[in-house]
Structure formats: C-alpha cells, structure tokens
Image (tube, rainbow, N blue to C red; front, side, top):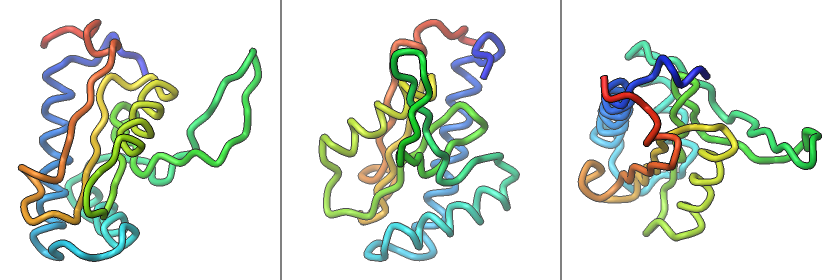
Length: 141
C-alpha cells in the first residue's frame, strides 16, 4: 500500500466503519459464541457495507532476504491498510496485542484493531486501537 495517499482522517473513518460493523454483529448475536461465528458474520457485514477486505490473509515474513512460508493469518485486512484481529475471550491478553502489533509491523500498517466479541458493550469494552511509528508519518488530511 502506498502510504503517501493515506491520511490520518481516512484511517479514523475506516476504523469508525469497521467498529460500526462489529457493533452491528454484536448487537445481533451478543457475547458467548465462538470466534469463527463472529468472523463469518463480520465478513458478511463488511460486504454489506461495501468495505473491501481480505479474510485469513497469509502474513508474509521476510528473513535475511528470503520469504519464509508461515502459518500466520490475519483475521481481516481491511482496505489493504488496517489489520483486524478478532477474539471471543473472557479478556484479551498481552499475547493477543503482541500478535496484532506483529501483523502491523509485517504488513506495514499504521493502525490495527483488536476486537473482542465476548463482552457486554463492544464499543466501550471490546475494541482496542493500536498505533505504530508508521502512523506518525501520515498526513492529517
């Protein structure tokens, strides 16, 4: 992705849209289901909203000049710029955050979202936004 054409405002709007889709899924299903159920419903909701994404994107790893085949899979990669990691757990752990931060680094993404559907209120309890160094280099508008 060419980050020269991406602004902080664009990313903020994209995060807002993805959170809206997650809220809609959570409002319909509530907490307590398996992650793969929420994943499939998120795919459907994103399609309905016209948001482009890759599901279960294989995350490339470059090591000493070669591409290493791995089993790393980003749950959703929105608009080729925003990795989203979905969970349905009692609480998110540092390992979940590390996983998303690693995807952000490997995919060269300035922002990432961690969404946990196993909460009562997804907007206040179930989503965390992560920012890395790339974000600082983006223009505001």
